Image (tube, rainbow, N blue to C red):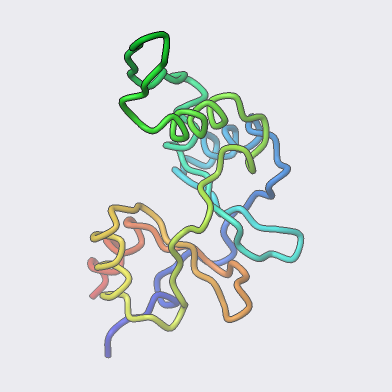
Length: 152
């Protein structure tokens, strides 16, 4: 019988709320040696994830998009809206300002093989596991999948 996500996920993962200060989220990631956290609302429903990648803007800052000036007009060579989003992340003080919204999720009864394929295709390190109401009940990481491979 093939394993499901529920068989290997970490139950009751550490979560943060949108209003959690960035410094607190960074401390949790460092202390627990994890690379990301689900972000939940007051009812426990998933609203986003915050990862090490989201926090990198805090340290690296943002480079302005390339542009040229032609006849006193600024012409951006890349989408300036992306730049605005990066600035927002770099200056964010709460999890909500920095988190990635609309994360990819998985259900607990999904076959582990399918979840692993999804993670590989989307190049993601963790999948929040949600129930029918959208509440976070676990998290599936690459490490969980590797551990499951050892115990087969």
